[in-house]
Length: 208
Image (cartoon, rainbow, N blue to C red; front, top):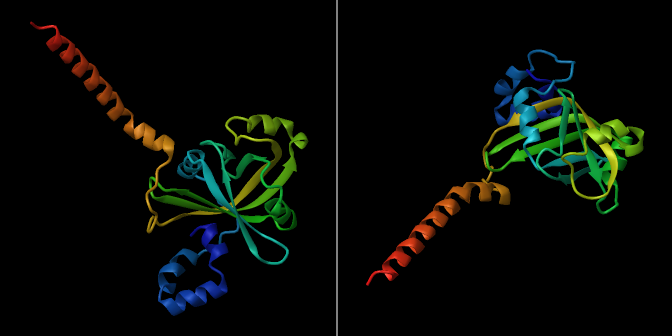
């Protein structure tokens, strides 16, 4: 069993599983208690590094959840070690809802999804936001790659648990870069054919 199942499958969740007929299957993952955080394995770390965005969920003092999209270049979320994620947080609309929420309750959920490969990863963690000047060495380490814009703080997440989600219902979508890379061989082939066609036309035009 994973630490994630232990945290996610609460008493009420187990009651619903019983009602819906999935309690037996779910219960197999709850036979042992796991008290220590789950370290990210190599597959999960690589998955996070290869994405250009994720959903960041926190809970405010009113008890309502809040979800924010965090985006940047591929790899802007750095995996510092199996238990730590970090990135440079840049200025947005200046509402600071996520920052305020994690100051009151550091428990967060991160949702990473790769539409092209129909895969998704869920992460529970404890988030901390600190000004850049409080850890200049870490800020420098996170500088490349990072999201464009004015950097306001360093966001770190101490991983508590994670789990892979099933690929069902993920609509395949591709980024502009992925489409360009996929079409590159076709563009090269087309360019060669056009060159050959131009050469043949020139040859035919020169014949008497």
